[in-house]
Length: 170
Image (tube, rainbow, N blue to C red):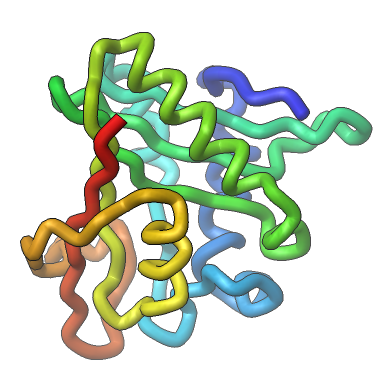
């Protein structure tokens, strides 16, 4: 297992991984699919490329030791004293094998290095299995509910979607 900060040269692999993990037929092979809730891409290439230019954003990648392929990633945004986690992606063929858990541990280590004392995430409110996964890892719903993005660059909702905010104190 190698988890490290992704570089601009990882753009194409990350673009493919993130969209495959969340949308389309291949996403349905894993348990984190959103294909039943949203159409379109999870993220467009232009937005993803822009993350590499923002000093407050870090993308971590999990690289397979044997193949060298990126099989997991997570978006981290510094919002001191909090670190926001988003776009948590694991290859649909490799979910439930500890990749996500390892990325979460790495995100916590990054938060500590950055002086952040809280991890925060947003989760689609109807995704109870995902909410429960985060709760088992110490995240607690804050009670805050926010609407899904109106910008279609993150997907086109098939019905109304709300996001719940969850946090974990470090």
